[in-house]
Length: 98
Image (cartoon, rainbow, N blue to C red; front, side, top):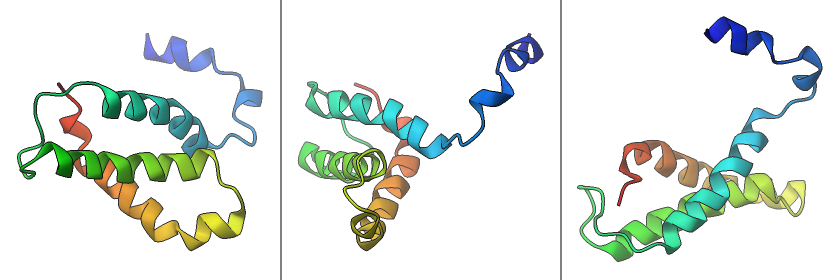
């Protein structure tokens, strides 16, 4: 079954394909919605919703910079913030629950 789905992807769809941009465009609006929704808990290493929101803000910033880099220089000058946000996303991947 997986092989059948793989065969449906045309090679032309993969040329010049930027996976990080594609994934960021999918993740960013969902992170923003998750941030806005009423949530009842935080990851166990955090104590408050304020701390959790700060982590979410780091993630949102990172994905926003990938999707909307104003200039290449701006992206690279804030790369440490992007890396911090992506690291937070990876570390909290199992924490997107309500």
